Amino acid sequence: MVGEVGMRQEDQIGFMDFPRDVTAQTREVAYETYNKLAFAKVKVVNFNFASTDYLNSAGIGLIISLVEDAVQAGRTVYAYGLNSHNRKLFRMVGLTERLTLVADETEARDKAKTQTAS
Amino acid sequence: MIPDSELENKGRVEIFLPSTLGYEKVARNAAAAVAEEMGFSTDRIEDLKTAVAEACMNAIEHGNREDKTTSVTVLLTAAPNRLEVNVTDEGLTPMPDEFPKPGRTEEHNRGWGMFFITQLMDKVEISRLPVGGNQVRMTIYLQPEAESGQGETKGE
Image 1 (cartoon, rainbow over the protein chains, first blue to last red):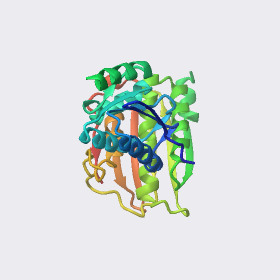
Image 2 (cartoon, chains in turn brown, red; image 1 turned 45 degrees about the horizontal axis):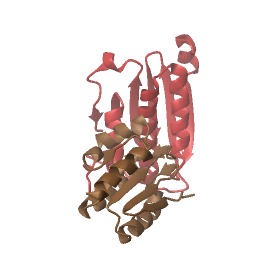
Image 3 (cartoon, each protein chain N blue to C red; image 1 turned 180 degrees about the vertical axis):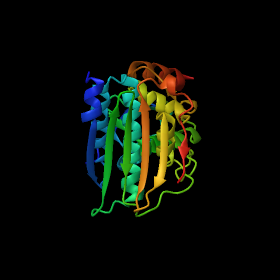
């Protein structure tokens, strides 16, 4: 069963709430959510991994694709809720050069508000 | 923790997985349970879980082409100073001599699995078996510092 990728929007800030398993099967629902946020012209996308337990290489590949699309469209991406191992995997593949890891949703929201206010 | 003498006699676990994506999590969880009993740190267990899941995914997706009539065999062998994990498929697609370099484009971002395996395990050997099938043999040491320089990938 493919978990849903939740979507929230607060003005120009978008949130993507990733499910327990982030794998190749997540790609379609993740892009559906991202495209809705892109259509709504958000400036910042926050990736919430607080519910994610299993993130495999295909899931990492999906995140790389989403981040590339967001960055190329001029959006800023923050990620939070990752355990220390998944943070390490993000560093290993170079994702931390393209997005910013933050502690939690509060920090992501604060940074995003500063970003969208400028 | 299980005494070394007991591990020598009882430290082998064999698992047969159907060639369906998602079942790699069964092997991942089994490997984590064995490593926990052996006294591996939480960080190393997380490394192991990722490597085992990725090796099983490669076997299911590529080695067995998700053919429902095939299976993947995972053998966990606990030794006093290390855990060895052998993942064997039926070789419907032979293991390539070289793995594609992973990258940021969608075309290239599926190559991260073997990258994680080689980076996270202390020793990795990849081979094609004489009877057919591919095998990924991974070793993780309880004391990785003492085994520095082991992290290499070998071809056939």
